[in-house]
Amino acid sequence: MKKILLSFLTILLISQIAYAKENLGLFDKSIRKSGIPKGSISISVRDLETGKIVKELNAKTQVSPASTQKVLTVLPSLNTLGENYQFATRLYKAKNGDYYLVLGADPYLTTKDLKNLLSYIKLEKWGELKNLYIDDSILDNKTWGEGWQWDDDLNTLMPKFGSYNIDGNLYTVVVKPTKINYPADIFTDVFYPTTFINKTKTTASSTNIKLERENYISPDALTVDGEVAEVTKVKVPVNYIKRYFILRLDDALRANKISYYGKYPTGKLPANSTLIAQISHPTSLAVNDALKNSNNLVAETIFKVAGGKYTNSTGTQASAMAMFNNYCANTHLDCTNIRLTDGSGVSKNNLVTADFMSQYLYVTQNKLGYEKTKHLLATPTEGTLKTRMFYLKDKLYAKTGTLSNISGITGYIDAKSGKSYAFAIYITSGNSSEASKKMLEEFLIREAYNNL
Image (tube, rainbow, N blue to C red; front, side):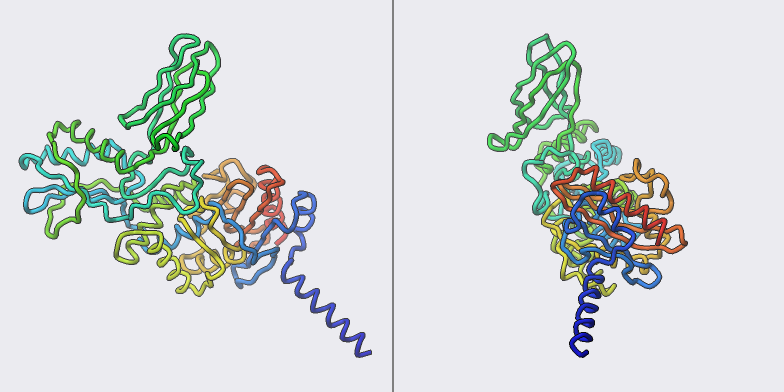
């Protein structure tokens, strides 16, 4: 009898452990139909009233978050910077007559803005421009994230970033047809030293252009290959953002008919300098772009800028992580099982768990308020959910993420029952298409909405 009882208790214990690891229920059928192995799926669904897990699968397995990571980096950044923070580029005049351009790493700054800002030098008519210094101390000089793919450096969704942000850190290559069977003309829309290896051919009807960066020749060497029948414009990420910014600064001075023959040395703004003018853009714009439109440049910038403010120093990945860790400590989140190496989720070196993501969303909405927090994320018909799950508009608020072989979605769902949940779903599978992974996500979310 004792042996029977012991065996029963053992079976019960094993079943309890299995239940804890795989508390699926209603999701099981959709997973089986998808053909995607359970081992490649992580799920965590958490009740917003109690904070308790209601459904989970491989919830403590480390996975790459892709762009869902922006939820982790942008919300603490907003908390640190405050809702009234402005990305500002400022023009000052020091007591000795020198001018200082203080950069704000503004991801929305344009060449037109720079021309408007420098027009105040001419308008004030305070004498000849002798020295123009640049204070670029807001961010460090690391312009790409750890673990970013070197062979994907022409991807316009992941340009380099830093204190010298301008024009989205992109420029345009124009490919123009000439005579049939002759090479096309290739040039840039603004002056930026680029060497073109021209392998194009002008045709009567077909246009198919491919660009490759020839880093082994020069970082500014581009091979342009393909057929050209009509004028084609291709956006290209700037390879050296400081040089690009300086060239646009030259343009801005010439546009304002300001003669300046000096260099642009870097230096900290002296005390008691006079503010002449500034160009600024609000934090709210950046939060919307990062969380709803998944803009990597904006997410990286806001994370480092917030880190700099938190440490009262130059913004770095280390200072941003110090801010993030402090946020976790203040909200009693254990972040020892995750790893963040950038601010956007582009790097595959980032690691999170579905359990951590749902818990993070639970404590964050407690801190900021549920209505406010969920509306920072996209609902169907917005941003990265613009063409997905229309039937859940104003019921689902989420951040998506996609890398090669990886798909994820995390956020909040207001279920048909009237209850609300935080959830995280990650699918890491090289044997299933992106469409199959997205479809499974939608089935799981629909079931959560209808049945939880």
